[in-house]
Image: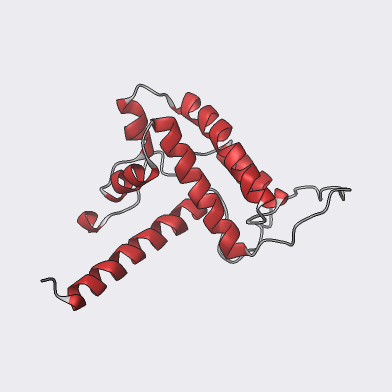
Length: 159
């Protein structure tokens, strides 16, 4: 029978790795946990809509929604399950390395990533998990850089 203390410690370790993955993904797409926009950001304020708006999404839940959407879209482009991708990243493989194995160049990957993540983020906006402005910020960031393209999330074996 397994030692309950070891199971709890292993579960906590997995949680720490998952949180680290989310934080790194958010940082890579330019969303910071402080919820403040960079000083150089000059995004126009969207015009009021006649459609009913959902309440503003909380920064943490919006960050999590973007990170999950990006991971899901990256996995779709690479033809693998999000869990498989997360495991590969934890083992030190970068998204760029995985794409190269499938002969997908960076420009093609980026185009497909933005195409695949857009409907996921649209759904998250409709569900109130993030605002349209947060979605546009994430899409702008993904249009200029790919999270984890050349560097994977450090895993336990890389220390």
